Image (cartoon, rainbow, N blue to C red; front, side, top):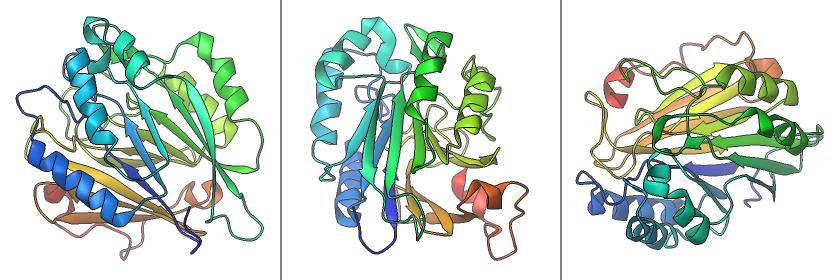
Length: 281
């Protein structure tokens, strides 16, 4: 982890290896940029493949292995569970429900000295819709117990609707229950993918950060392929959307702590520039 009081997370999802709209050039740029910026943690919340076939998983792993960040978390998405693909995810990537602890340099004094990252598979075989499931609620509470960590939840399906994605049909079935559990646990950051449109929702003291499709042209409207670089500091969280097809970057800055974010209204300096919506979509 960095020692300059900043914790950096690289978030990319929906790479869709094996799809006709997968772009190997965008994948190479993503790997190059992440290796240049050396984030403390790389999170990949799902849809590594198009149809869950073993060769697609092997291709995805070969790319992800080239990201030099030593701390990575990966979970499956709905496309990865097609054609019984969850079997190959298990064999090639491993666990689908797990938690890990990392040092956390952005806690301040006093403040958390570790980051707790909890990863959960929300995919359902051969369905676009997702669900964590009631049998996992107790497990989630246990993983996030305590107040001594900066808490991050990684899931494929988004928990709140994402603007600019058309009719909302694929939100997690039990999103309300999951949001309540996360809120009660004091979770700080929720990282998701699925809809191919980047967005940030401040909700119930959390930041729900969705990543776009980083390496494919399965985009919506005029959205461009992109990934997120998240910088966590003692008093702020900066979410930078980075386009992989060009050099455009769009940043938003939020107060870091839940107490500050509840009811927080962006000042003019924090608001995106007028081209923000067009840049994202």
